[in-house]
Length: 201
Image (cartoon, rainbow, N blue to C red):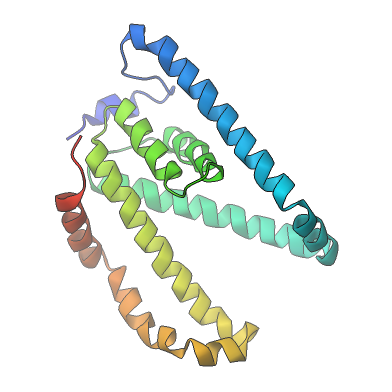
């Protein structure tokens, strides 16, 4: 189990690495930042026509509301992730966890979908946290995100597309089961199962 003091006391973003490894770590960070920026630029350039057409079709009020909802959703996702880490013995101060979570989210612009989780696990490990526990928190957070996403889709589909609701009616029938899966006891069982099979570091 990680020492809470080591985690909370490392808010400045420092590392527990030895002084000799810091130059190499700094070079790795610079390379990673450049890779993320390059990936973001490629993604925007590739979809530039779609982005331009979409923005031209949307009203300013719609864009503003969508932006607020996206920001709120990301903040709630971060709060859920931080809460999961606390549950399994890795307490993070709000500001420190905020920087870690949202900085590592830039990894989604690198080819492959696992980089945010990999970067989060590595960042927690540098702060003295148990990496296996961090893997557990990330997997559980993905499950919670999928369940809540399906729930939101079920609740909004009737207002968006009646035809889609007829095609995916089984999802509505599964909603009570999905809601039960978010119960703390169910999450605890899932966390224990994940920790048994997750890699140890």
